[in-house]
Length: 280
Ligand SMILES: [Zn+2]
Image (cartoon, rainbow, N blue to C red; front, side, top):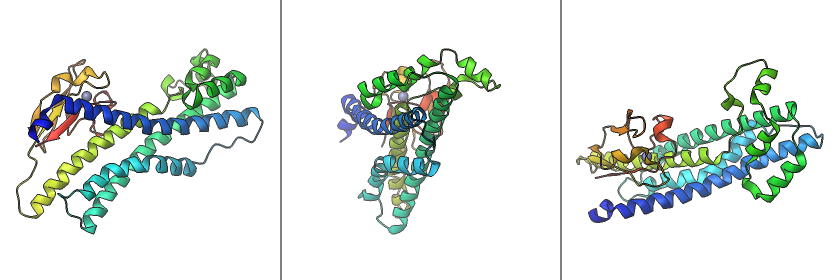
């Protein structure tokens, strides 16, 4: 067992599989986002009454889209033979899954709303070539980059801003695809659930008067996803309940993280990170 867990190839492979799973899940979120934008633009040109989808509807759909993946991760804890199968424990874990699901949905909802705001402004202040839009959206299927299409109609973002008489940073108005957000959030959830699983096993041992099963943890840099910023952390080992001192190779900054992709960490260190960790 120990030899497998120390094997570099094992972690590279594990990371690659997780990356594929995240991409697939992110793809569905992206398609959902695209359909909403397409419908909005279509209604606009058909002179239909433009009704933005209600927040409740968006929330409900995103909840359904994200739920299977999130629950699958936390179900590992519920079904683990190392943790108690009491109703209380199950409720506790489900609450954690629910809280995580909420965070994910809120973040995606915010991005979709910003994309809708941006689309609304483009349509109101510029001439969008609908034929071109429809052609590209159709040809490139469901993941066509709507940002490029729209930005072709918006040559000067400052113009939009000046129209509204406010100086807001351009990223507030910009259109952004959702797949990167979805992938990063999934990745955070995976690492979070892994940490919770180790912790649950420790708690279980304590409840039986036994010592912790996991007392240390090791940072593993997998070299996956072209994210080289954490390579110098490879092999860093700390007590299980201590923080890793995560070094950002490019900036040299050091940040305490409970585990790779720790949702409480900074954007620079926790967004699209394919590092792993193992406890022992
Ligand atoms: Zn990393």
